[in-house]
Length: 177
Image 1 (cartoon, rainbow, N blue to C red):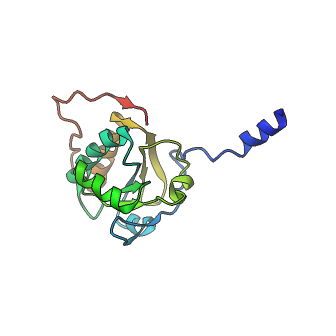
Image 2 (cartoon, one colour):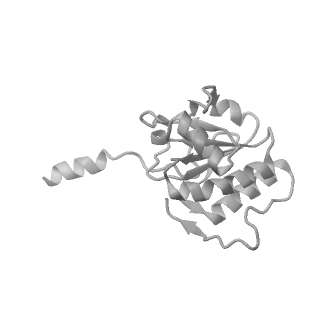
């Protein structure tokens, strides 16, 4: 019995990729059926890959803040890619409901990209540098992580960091996913 348990532990899915890891390829359709390839997007600059599920309350809380980063730095030199674990129709509805304008890719069937990144929870975000190295990763809502993404994008673009959070907003430091 103990040998079976130990074998099962050894066969577990790989852990979530950490900073310093090479980002696995992403080649998925967006919500309109057009294929998007991470390597191609990285040619222009760093990418924030934000994995989510439409039914996840923490995703519903976090993604509008990711949208603020998108609006602050909208450029062909940085990119945000949502990676939805739902079908295209539900993903479109979610984007409309939460005011998301960054593209969302569909990783719904068997979650091949989510699994390649070692996801166990959503939302999970990966800041991927232009050379394909993961600079930062975090799960759940992470106020300091989002501020770090904003600072990183600003530095890449040679501009001042835009605040992600408004002074009058009561935003927790973290919400687990």
